[in-house]
Length: 310
Image (cartoon, rainbow, N blue to C red; front, side, top):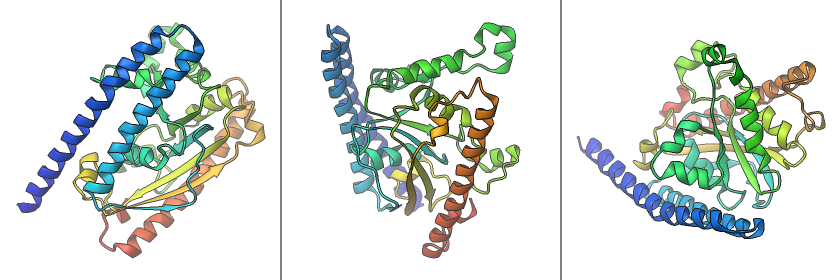
């Protein structure tokens, strides 16, 4: 009973702080967005864009402070954190939980350019956050099902065109584009339904990474490959702020983009498409083995940890 009360109080306090932090930062961010729209030159708009980024980094900084001060979570990092706030990176990661996002933001805030995620177009209507993401140039993508394309053939390829358009604006800006290559969060049900050959991962979807490299391959400096494992299997965001996640193990590595994929023609060259898929599959096999090693570390440190059964 006391544990339930403690959980509820921690979650309520965490949600309240998150909401206040969002309001405090989003309102000036939206005002700065209006200012940017009024700026007459590209140079002046870029100055305001820098202000917008600083506001977003401050918002992330407070969320990270909450993790440090409200929890005893031990984040253990293997590999070196890249530090290049002016570079251009593609960040890829396995996806287990909504907690992945604040952890990734905590790791890279002010070390890399602001992390930007590809978002579903419907998320632009999320109160406060939707307009904020739009103001920060997060790419919103509209995906069409096979049924929609069958009814309206003119939609075929439009989502790909929108991906390219979204990436074009980042060619001359510092950017860290985030891609969860699995396309969705891992669950046992999804893993079984897919018949995935990986022990701890869903099958990778290579198209999103390919389209980024098609558009920005010559400007992307490196790929930052992240693997995250929790001591609590698939924790909710509320579990994180309720201090239920004892340890988080993160493995990092930076990868150079193979020369053969810098001029990638994924949609038009079947041979390049196959070679790229094979490369992604090899990366995913390496990541699967890396996650297995991280889970073994958790088991040795915390024999009762839920995550050893992931």
